[in-house]
Image (tube, rainbow, N blue to C red; front, side):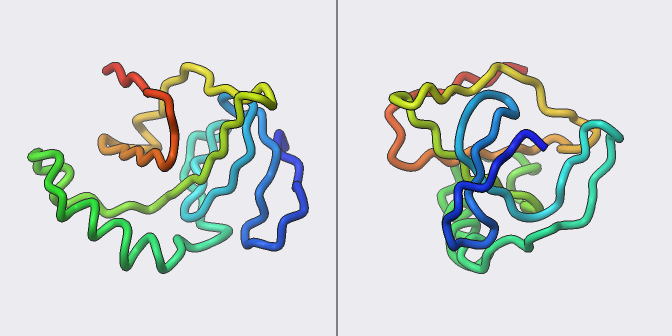
Length: 119
């Protein structure tokens, strides 16, 4: 699968992953099946805290004035923990526009690095 359960008691469990670089991660919401290029139903629904607190607060910031962000309704979320001392890294990659559509939002918490996005 590319991920191995690290045994924490949180649903879904944190897993060691190698997809797009070595890291520890978990995901909620729809699953973009890259092999078959389709969007599968969620294994785990988006957490209430994301839907009721985080997403509305981000929208209220009005950081992006485009219409696509005003109507933005997230259907997928990933929590990814990169630890430099453990050799973790993020591989440069392209998200499948057929599966992800146009709007992709990134929120980094407590990180000391920068991500560069190119179109």
